[in-house]
Amino acid sequence: MSNDTSPTDAPPTVTPKSGYHHGDLRAQLIAAVRDLVETHGPDGFSVAEAARRAGVSSAAPYKHFKDRPEILRGVVSEAMDRLRLAMEAAAAAHPTGSLEAVAAIGLAYVDFARAEPGVFRLVFSLTEGHEHAPDLQTKGESCFGVVVQAAAACLDLLPDDPQVQRRAYMLWSFVHGHSFLHIDMKTKVTTAKIDDWDYLMTISRAILAAEARG
Amino acid sequence: MSNDTSPTDAPPTVTPKSGYHHGDLRAQLIAAVRDLVETHGPDGFSVAEAARRAGVSSAAPYKHFKDRPEILRGVVSEAMDRLRLAMEAAAAAHPTGSLEAVAAIGLAYVDFARAEPGVFRLVFSLTEGHEHAPDLQTKGESCFGVVVQAAAACLDLLPDDPQVQRRAYMLWSFVHGHSFLHIDMKTKVTTAKIDDWDYLMTISRAILAAEARG
DNA sequence: ACTTATATGTAAGAAGTGCTAACTTCAGTC
DNA sequence: GACTGAAGTTAGCACTTCTTACATATAAGT
Image 1 (cartoon, rainbow over the protein chains, first blue to last red):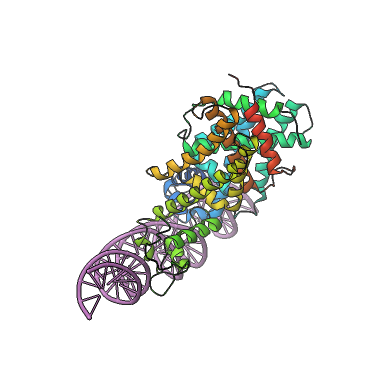
Image 2: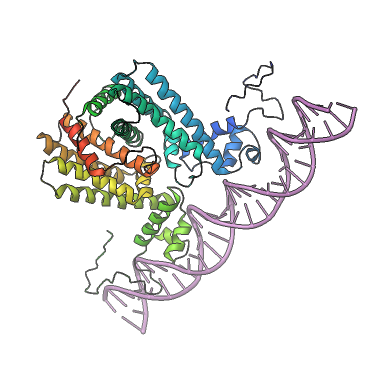
């Protein structure tokens, strides 16, 4: 999708911005919007401004996106891809089934939120109004899937097991909340400094080792 | 503030919308904006539209609020008051120091998010850009204070104790994340149905009873 | 009844937006 | 070498927005 590595042997130089044809708008538009969202909030962007930043006319974007919302969806889609990749990479860096793998996934999540708070918020602000985007929903489920897999391995159960789903959801809520609080309050709310890794390990242990109940 | 119960014996009928003087704009504007935010997202409102809904001209709001942002801040401020009250009430309904009290606070939080997802999001989307609003920050800390108090009572420690702060923050992240996931994904992400009370009790127990570490 | 303060209305300006229509440039194909 | 179609451009419509200046209507106090 994003890499349309054409089968021709012509090396697709990363910056083919030769003259008239921009070569690779769309991607650059998405990047521009990402920036704008990052600095002006989820709705603080305009396709006009994005076009300006990409160095094209204000009508150009409509050759790549049907709508203003579609641009936003593009940004979110791309962001979710990156998030999932980061989570997968983090998990892969630790032994399968280890608590560390779980914590690492959480850390990747938090890091993403911290690195791109605006986009992070956007991803979750977007669910309303854009219901008809199965694409995004699928990607969201894939992200959750990463957590589920790690939790299953850790508990030595199948991913389908309700217990696994429940624990994974707990982990996710927790990390999600931590991420949001962090980017919102910017550590201003509690005096206690927090080391993310310790924190995530503690939580993972508490949740995955907690006695089942009810 | 909101109730300018004038010392005259004139009964301030709740709907004094007699002719010219609206009687109680400001409050009604805030309500209108709340509605708009609820249905069109954090930035999906305009003072013009809010004025329209309140039945006044588009210039009227500026007699009560200096700015567009100030209106938003008003909404958030009011919402935070309500949130804190709900949390306090929930805590008061259970024995001091009980796990139930902690879980009840969490439930109040989740209920608030569910009842007013738009406003809930707004409260936390607003922190950027409105740094110079000590008012809001204070109210945020008050909310956290409720959790801290309950956690301290539960652990039989002083609220200042770092351990308490840490546990309280854990609880908060968790509940915060659960709230957000709930209003964003609308239970679509995990097949496992979740009973909030059981869930919150489990978590409260896991966090407040977890062996300290590190 | 007269003044004063408060609460609203009217009108308008300057800016910005999303999006469309019609024209142009460029790259590749028969 | 002409044709096609994608990717951009320029121009502009129709609209909404925030905000201000000035006028006006009501309520309250003396």
